[in-house]
Every structure is written in structure tokens, then in C-alpha cells.
Amino acid sequence: MSQKNKIIRVPRVKLADAVAHQLEQLILEAEYKIGEKLPPERVLAENFGVGRSSMREALRMVEAGGLLRTDHGVGVFVVSNEKVTLLPSDLILTGNYRVSDLFDARLALEKAGASLAAENISGPEVANLRLILERAGSEGVSDHEFITLDGQLHQAITEAGGNQLLADLSKSIEHLFVVYSHRVIRLPGRRETAHVGHTLIVEAVARGDAIAAENAVARHLADVQKDIEMHLEPPL
Image 1 (cartoon, rainbow, N blue to C red):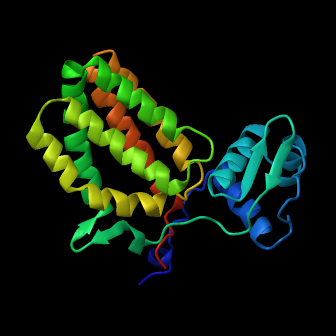
Image 2 (cartoon, helix red, strand yellow; image 1 turned 180 degrees about the vertical axis):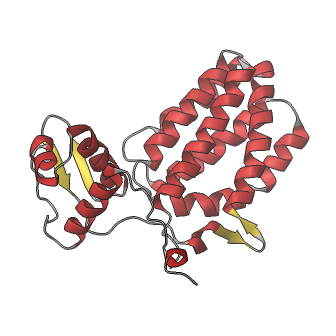
């Protein structure tokens, strides 16, 4: 084999990715300690030798990993030296089922359920969905309570569609939903992102917009998958 054939192409790395990786290492190695306020974005950008837009993106990436918290108007603080990750084993639910299988099933069932609900939902059922949303967004709600309310919301939407078979099929995978939810609820910002997604679904259903309801379900599930991919520990 020639020397030329031994060359491995060097992957292109976004500037923000490289900065985020280096900043993470500084935090993990306690160069920046828990509770410490980071220098201003302008100073960090100068120190890392990058533009402010790249620095800003890198900070968002590290914050998504659970190491930083932004207090608007105050600054960016180190809140952890342990990056939140999911292991590949976390994507196995039970038996032969994986999280990806659950997402495929949920996408099919919940898009159909939301579409039918938009066409058939009653006033009291809309009020019930909004009550569940209000409870889920209340201060002091534990992760376990949030997951319970999350499941109730999705099931109530499907049942509002009036198709009992669809509702029964949705109910049959509830145990898988609970297992998966307890694994991902700890990801940074997961509850907040989920609540926004739930609100968009409910509002689309409430105004009778079947297409918007389907799209809101698709976006909601895509956001979860994005969070999982972002925090999935790469294989060794």
C-alpha cells in the first residue's frame, strides 16, 4: 500500500464545536469551577481567538450539556462538572423494542390522533387539555409528576379523536413511554422544550386545525430526538 493510500482525511470541524469541546474540557478539569462566573462573551471570544457568534454558539452547546447556566442580565455560570449524557444502552427499552421503535409508533399514532382530535374535540375536552398543561407548567412539579401529566395529555388528545381502536393502541405502549421518559427527562431543558411542544399541539387541536396539529406532533417528537442525539455518548 502506498503512503498516499494510508492517508486518512481529516474531518472538518465547525469552529463553535471545537471551542465548545475545549471549554467543556476546561470545566471538567476544574479550570472553571462550579459556581464560578465565566468572563464576558467578548473576553472569551478574544481568549479563544474566535468571533463572538462562534463563541455564543459554543456557550449554547456547553449549556445544553448541563455544564453552564445563563442568568440573563447577570452572566454565565458553571453549574456542573459532569456532562449529562445518554448511553447506547439507554436506547433499549425492553425485549426487542428500542426508543427508535417507540418514536416510529408514536409518530404514526399521535399524528393521526391529533388530526382526529382537531376535527372532533369538544369544549370540555379542550378545557381538560389546558388544565393538564397548566398543571404540568406549575412550579414544584416533580419529574415523575410531569411524566404522568405528559402521558395523560397525549392520551387525552388521542381519545378526543373518537377512534377507540386508536386510543387503545396508544394506551398499549404507555409502559414503554414511561420507561423512556424517565431516561430522558434529566436532559437539560427537556421539560421546558416538551412543554412548549405540548402547548403548540393543544392550541392547534383547540382551533380545529388538523394539519397544524399533525405538524406540531412531528416537531415535538423531532425535538426529543434532537435532544437525545445531542446528549448520546458516542460509542468507544
